[in-house]
Amino acid sequence: MSAALEFLLLAAFFGSYLWKGIFFATAVLMAGSVLVLALAWWHSHKLEPLPLAVTILALVLGGVTLLFHDAIFIKWKFSIVEWLFGVVFLVSQFTRQTLIERMLGTQIKMPAAIWKRLNLLWATFFLLLGSANVYVIYHFDTTDWVKFKVWWSTGAMLVFVVLQALYMSRHVQMEKTS
Image 1 (spheres, rainbow, N blue to C red):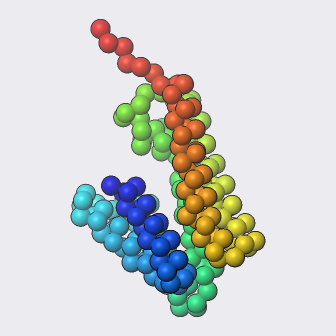
Image 2 (cartoon, one colour; image 1 turned 120 degrees about the horizontal axis):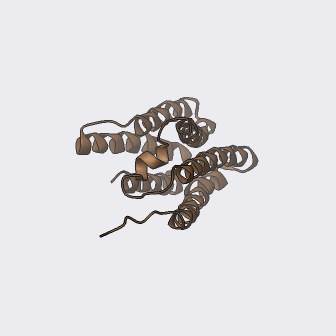
């Protein structure tokens, strides 16, 4: 459910940007973030730390964007969120079970070394994506930044997921049946 809601929120941000510009899109993103968090709460009766942090960042940086009428703040939200994800994945490298293994390990069996490598790849991906966003912020206009945020980063994520699936398929351990 969360991935679908996040996609709808991204579509709402893009559509509202095309319709009324970055400041209206920022307000839509803020309201939509609260709505996504509320729906997640309604569905599971708990708030996960990362979606909560993303919503807080959307409200704070979106609020500052609207207050100062400066889009730079909402543009930085994407980098901060990606870096936050990257750091969380990176920190989990030093725990008994990596974040990616906690997320997928009940459905997929692979050697611990492969989970570590996969987790490190995700950390690197998020850190690089956040850094690419900073480059786009300072070298392109807002329209190009929105295109990067909506199309290029989403496309990069899809390509990365497919590559990860191909990589994982080489290492999945099949359970033996008698």
